[in-house]
Length: 447
Ligand SMILES: [Zn+2]
View (cartoon, rainbow, N blue to C red):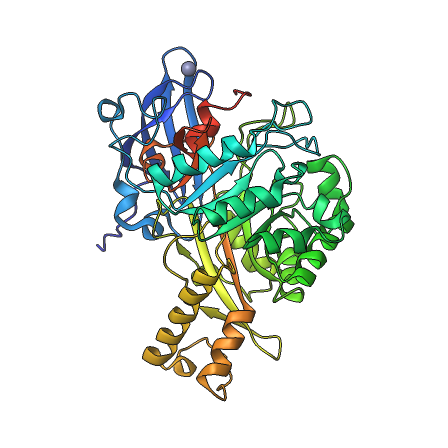
């Protein structure tokens, strides 16, 4: 009789440490595979058992992360992690991108906000204070990429000075995390920021229809988002569109957002999808149902009619593989899309048009072409370019980076992932923390 080997229905992939989503206590945990789903499971002595879906379906969890699928952090090794974090000796990644919070004020009071920002906020740090903060970053993290963040940084009237100061300190790449309202409203603003040295605008962009803005941001904003993109295009500023994906609100918008991004190239350099995490402020009573990275990849595939496929994407190599995916496409003159080999290395949004990044990308593309004979690669519909220069120019202008990042919340936080976090936050002008640890323990709103 023939024996058929069946995969076990349930399998513990790794022992690790996780949090109680109620009291935030660090607990021993397991990653458990059931069929094609993976759950993070633990029991709080005070609040009972918790099982959180962290990976849903294809591509398979084990194949995606390789050896990392079986790595964890034991509860003993966890010690005070992540509560005592200020990037200790156990942290395994240097800073790639640092969030530099120049204000806690915001000109929107979104129903959904990781920072729980709003008009009621403490006074902004002065330019003199920020000068010292920049020096503290240089001391601890060197000349990393900086994301000016908040709050909404554009509520500061001296934002150009803040940017110019960062550039004068020698930071090679500054991107602005913004809702785009001021870029849309003030004619010369984008050019002003560009002149001050800004490299890229990381634009909150949830949909190409207003219903999603009303649900997530409290009012229709599409016209302003489009105007912000046009303002950046006119000023020669690159834009990365950043949708926060919420199931049932805008998870049908991925294809439309990508379509809009392609139509606004070369100004739009990338789309960076962020499945919603549940910290800060979220609509009361909403169950924390979240999109996992494979969910996002499958939505991209179905909503682009297969022009983008899950197989085109790879995990980030600089951080834990379960935090992100990235891929890139060359937009052909005839409107076709050719997948490019995902770019290695560090970037929060990819596709950033900073000089050094462009130089890296150009070098990357030239190496690819020279070595592999790109035109022969299967799945690549690149027309034979007239010259290397022409090819490089087209690549530089018309490569769209598509990426996604799943931030951790109290339900999904896994200390093995947290130790490999490379997106850090400057806290109170002194301490540098992993972004997710900061959100878990150092924001005003606790779960
Ligand atoms: Zn608890």
